[in-house]
Amino acid sequence: MAHRQSLIAGNWKLNGSRQSVIELATAVSAGCGHLSAEVLVCPTSVHLGDVSTITADSAVTLGAQNCSNEQSGAFTGEVSASMLAEYGCKYVILGHSERRAIYHESSEWVASKCQAVQKAGLTPILCVGETLEEREAGQVESVIAEQLDAVLNSASIQAFDNMVVAYEPVWAIGTGKTASPEQAQEVHAMIRARIAAHDNAIAQALRILYGGSVKPDNATTLFSQVDIDGGLIGGAALDAESFLAICEAAG
Ligand code: PEP
Image 1 (cartoon, rainbow, N blue to C red):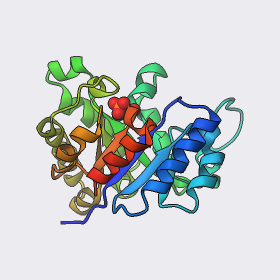
Image 2 (tube, rainbow, N blue to C red):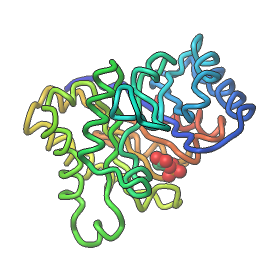
Image 3 (cartoon, rainbow, N blue to C red):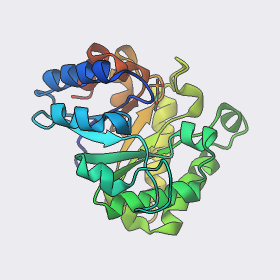
């Protein structure tokens, strides 16, 4: 079986001041040098310059929370993947449920962003996940299949060679309700099997993160599941001590 290095990604969302973000980045950078997991922080785009200066000489990797599917031109307010690359970003979170729900990003749109990110030499963190209504209606598999297939259809299975998938049940994000380790594992295994149906080697190497109210006290059992390769962390990533404890749980 392919060895998959754990990845813990902090999604800082629209939080913090310039000063508080500098302090958070400094504390995370100082505390993660000994970890075997890859540690990633994703501040807002406007904070990337400050954070990249702090993380440059540390073990912390830098990422962004979103980007345009366009490279340049008349797209007011957008930021391109190549601009993010210039600031040292290695990853871009795409298709987060907040972007899908609040900004009406379709799976096709998210897929075109994946292509733009890969073209700029960065790695997309493709978020997928079902709402509570969809879970209760027995639609978990079909919802996630649609979200994955949009990428497969617009590119090819090779796109998953340079991709991280984050399973984030919408009902668990920011709610304090975590999927049980068994519930999460079941979906992670389903995602890996869907990719394996196209290319088993790519599927075995693919890192699949769990996101949704991960905290220091539930991280260890979640990360011990065979198909959970780390986490996408929201609320707990805003506190350096909690975030580092979650990183420790991943190794
Ligand atoms: C997220 O923002 O992707 C997330 C998982 O948030 P939280 O950890 O707060 O549920």
